[in-house]
Image 1 (tube, helix red, strand yellow):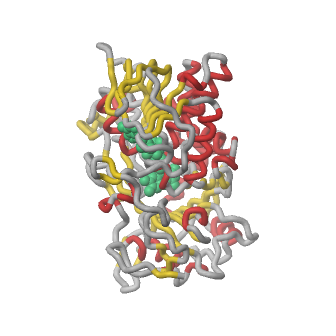
Image 2 (cartoon, rainbow, N blue to C red):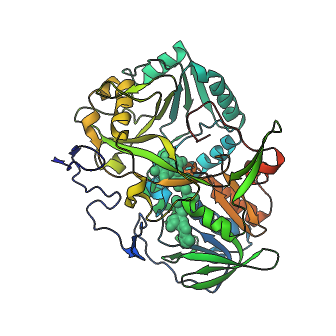
Length: 495
Ligand SMILES: Cc1cc2nc3c(=O)[nH]c(=O)nc-3n(C[C@H](O)[C@H](O)[C@H](O)COP(=O)(O)OP(=O)(O)OC[C@H]3O[C@@H](n4cnc5c(N)ncnc54)[C@H](O)[C@@H]3O)c2cc1C
């Protein structure tokens, strides 16, 4: 075992994998530079990629979870309906699969949202994860969310809404919650925990595996995969309809564009004529004027090596469910007795494929940034967007507070980069909508590695001309027509 050097992000810690601190590069050299800035590369090797054609029926921009799912499902739906083939679809990314948030996400697939209409989006997404769990790297271990007494009403609403949407979950309150949680993890420390929601169809997925799987499916269905080409703008006619996509390799004429650009979405939105502010009208008639359409948040995540003899398995030796705990009234104290935060907010999943040895990955509430942040360099390459110095102690303290098995785990925090930013919408809930009559934007408000089904729903709409019910609540028109989603009883912006 080696030990990493003390650095700006924390003390020396065990590093049994002997990887360097640049995930996913491990012991590879740093990636190439574009205009003097490190360029976050694709997370999977790509082969048989294509040059940019002169025209296409559909151009999909961005090879993250949404762009790749859309391109694959477009090719499939066109072929199966007899309305076209995969040759009608061109997928463009300035790097390649997983070069944005998708390649570095924690990989949690859950349905625990206060926003009811998201439950159907997640039901549709889990159906896609279940359609090929091997090639998507989907581990259907379930997901458990735990809260305190002050959240019981919200848990009842979420439980009802999930089940109404066709997504089964079970709810346990008080003594039932304790016996449920201790049945799975006998060493779980209840503390002030009082309510537990169990989603049986949720779990986690390896981020590289799903990128590889979707890239292969795009290939198999005949999508033209153009990687290493950057989109610089869009050609539009007098009505605003898109006639072509401008790239670093010239223009490509097209009939339809779908944008899945993650943290870069605000640029594409602006290029396509979307407004940068909006008035927000709520169901009770309240209007908040001139809200920014996009605000960036910086995610706080990390990895912990499991020491010899410690596992994250259940009492019956299964891979444990993903666990998410928010105890709003329970402070977290550091080793020096000082309070780090006045609440517990923590999530974890087994992540050997990520850590390199048996380990877990998780995080806490992201940090709000401004409405205008630099996306480059993206992810782990960007010094400004890494976890704060307090994070390692906070995160491992929450693990110690929740499990006897994790007592003393602090030194096993794997001190390497896990940062990334996301663009959140004006109400922190996704926008899935046309910004022009033939330009569709999938803006997941940083909720969406799990939302692999959105690309299928969008493809269905574009091929068959009918908007699926699941997508209807997520138009940008909600901001004007009283459908703005509300805030919640949580410290988190993931509503
Ligand atoms: C640290 C972190 C952890 C997360 N954990 C989870 C989680 O556990 N579960 C979950 O559900 N969600 C999670 N998320 C959120 C989730 O990762 C994102 O919401 C989702 O991956 C966004 O997918 P996307 O396809 O929209 O964008 P991205 O994955 O960011 O892909 C966008 C792609 O567009 C390309 N691109 C951008 N601009 C251009 C251009 N001009 N020309 C050509 N190509 C361009 C980029 O190169 C990139 O490959 C996490 C996010 C972060 C940052």
